[in-house]
Amino acid sequence: MNEPATLLRDHQLEAQRYILGLPAADGDWLIDRRQAAIGRLTELGFPDGRQEAWRYTSVDGLLQQGFST
Image (cartoon, rainbow, N blue to C red; front, side, top):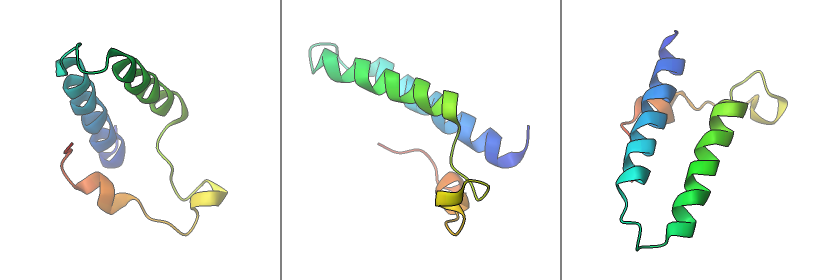
């Protein structure tokens, strides 16, 4: 796995841990939505310069940052 893909996977895992750790009484419907969003990101992948809409936007700096809520 290359470095950006590894960083993305690390962010996804950290987000998943965070979502699973949220109290269920604090908006259970929102947890389901967040889970669905992570699934969609996994399915579609993270945007990069090969996609026309992202051609001139670098997301490397975003991936280099640690995950935070």
